[in-house]
Every structure is written in structure tokens, then in C-alpha cells.
Image (cartoon, rainbow, N blue to C red; front, side, top):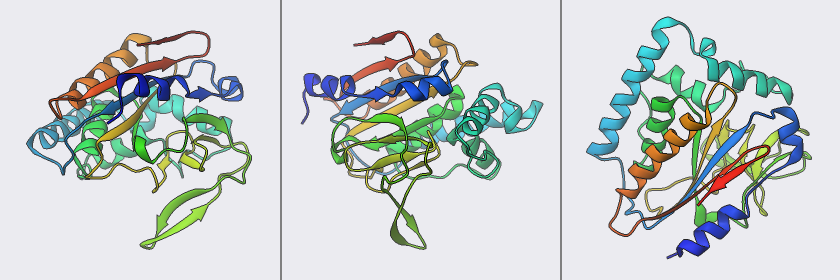
Length: 244
């Protein structure tokens, strides 16, 4: 099991490249590393969270379409800034909102929890298996030759990001394409995951306090997944950093 110091060191090694902040100076990321969760499939708690998230999303959409929500619109602008077409590759928050009418996917306990937090707090959230990382995470603009493993037609395939695309990566390759669009197969959360890394993304429409609230909610839910769960977190911003 990883110690508190090891979790903190992993987060301290995380970086957001200056060229990403040049695209969106208002970008902030809440990074959370958690160790010691009891793994498993979805349960009554995660199911109740998903149902609450679906209801909250339907309420939010009563006034308009997903792209009319302030934070979704801001992410669409961010995608356009690095050349992506948001109507084709939607940020993770918008993708979840568009699935709420027919029901959110039920994947596993950790994934279901962070999807629920995403909708309840209207922020993109991603989660990955920390033990499958090769070095610390970095948010960069891709050169275009990096590897990204995904699944197509039931088979694992390797893709490459577009030059200039905003991606999360480690030493082994890309872990998430187009900022918060699609995560790699290699680092995905599994039913046996006990050590996880989460990213909560925020742009201008989301205040610092709202970002912290979303992080606190996720930390509380993850901390309840075992008697010996340890959590570290850090906020990365353009000019200031907070963490513990």
C-alpha cells in the first residue's frame, strides 16, 4: 500500500504545461490520489448516487440544451481553441448530460461515483488506476507521435493524438485525449482497483469554491470505501497552487 507521503509525491510531480494555460488561463485542476479502497462492482450507494445525478441533470436541462449550460459552453470553447470539433468529440460533462435521459452507464463502483459527482457538481471528472501509471501525470499539448491505447471493435488498438491536442500523459503514453474526452484502456479503473487518481477540471464559470466543493464530495465518497482509505489532493492553477 502507498503511504501518505507517496500519494503526495505523486501529486506533487503532476504538471500542467505553460502552453495549456496559454489556451485557457482560467483552467484549474483538482487532483486527488486515494489508496486503500475496497474494490468492487456497483452497489446500493453508487446506484443511489447515479439516480440522484440523473435527476439533477434532468433538472439542469429543463432550461435548455447541454451546450447552453455555462460550463459546457466554456469547454466547447476550450476544445475549439486546440482544433477539436466539440460537436464530434464532447467533453466528458456534456457526454454524461446527453446520456441522462436514457440513463447513465453502470460501470463499477469507483467510476459510478465519479460520474455522479461530475453531474451533481457540473464539472468534468476523470478517474484512473494510479498503479498503472508510469511516472507522474502531465497535461501537455501533444506532438502527435505519442501512443494512446483504446478499444475498437472489441480489440485493443493504438492511436495517436493530433499535433497540438491537449492530453494528459505519463512516461508510457497518453492517458486521456482531448483534455477530458476519452481515457486510455491501460489506466482505466477496474473492479479490482484499490489505488486511484482523479482529476476534476474547471474553467471560468466554476468558482474556486465550487471546485473545492466537488473535490470534497468525491473525497468523502471515496474515503467511505474502506476502513483504511488514505487520500491526498492538490489544486493546480495558472498562478497559485493549493494542496495538502
